[in-house]
Amino acid sequence: IDITAILKWLIEISENCQLHLFSAFALKYLAKYLIERFKDFDTAAGLIGKYEIMLHRNPLYKFLFYSELGRQYFFEKDNDGAYYYLSGIRDIMVPDIYTEKIDYLIAYLQVAYQKEQLSLAYRIATEALKLALGRPNYLLEDKVKLYGESAIGLSNENRLVNALTQYS
Image (cartoon, rainbow, N blue to C red; front, top):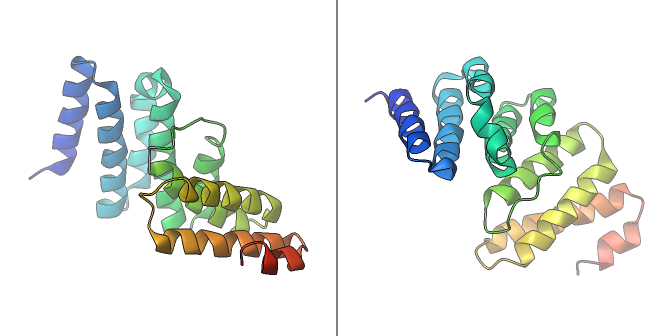
């Protein structure tokens, strides 16, 4: 089975039927598949040019695709590549129902820590924690991790007392 061909076919069919969100998710998973299966970052990133019109149709579509690319670069420990894609979508408003938002925030805060942008990492960690606490579908383990990330962020801001007391 040629998964790449199937995903491209899904993109084409969904675009023809004007199911744009469906095509955006198919494009996201095409990039994910190319990277996870073949480590083909170049082809995955090249999809931006090929599907530029789709990605600019709605900011959410760009968010879905860029956050996936950024996370994949992060997983490969390429913090510069991850930062490039993740930082470029910071201001896109994403409805809280999209669990991709918290995945994005977690990857972005880790990249910010790696790039020693500690204040940014703290702001992202607290945003992620607030989002997770407001949604019952996030796992307790994720919430605990985000409490820890937020406390670390406070300690990096030289607010040690707050780091020890704010989340206790």
